[in-house]
Amino acid sequence: MDRAQKEKVVEELGQIFESSGVVVVAHYEGLTVAEMQDLRGRMREAGGAVRVAKNKLAKIALDGKPAASIAEYLTGMTVLAYSEDPVSAARVMDKYAKDNDKLVILGGAMGENALDPAGVKVVASMPSRDELIAQIVSQIGAPAANIAGAIGAPASNIASILSTIEEKAA
Image (tube, rainbow, N blue to C red; front, side):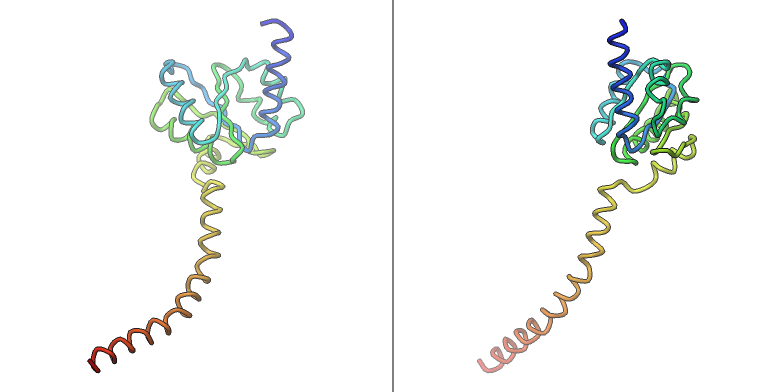
């Protein structure tokens, strides 16, 4: 890899560290190519991505970024998982690490907040952005549905009474 390629990788990593809601660092020693492709596919489905980069280049890219605290985890064979949604990457990595003991979560960062492995688990257990939006919408919609039901109930009661009277008259 020549200098221009290294500079490009550092720039790409810098953007990842700058714009991601969460970055998770893990050791992946012993994972097969098929297992790594499976991890990448799961992460892509969740709206995140997986990146393997030289630790030295990643440390250079971290300089001055909010996620600089993860530099201490960049030793050995590391993989970076990231997503804009602060929960997606952590959730996929946590689930994959439970299923495959070759992937060991070292920690991560959520903005300027450093995460240890337990912190990554906590973030993974939180509801995602889409789940939170769905919960809020259902909470907002519930009173409106109750009001509509209350308003519509007398009309349906009157209609059933009228049909009962009509049946008796016939």
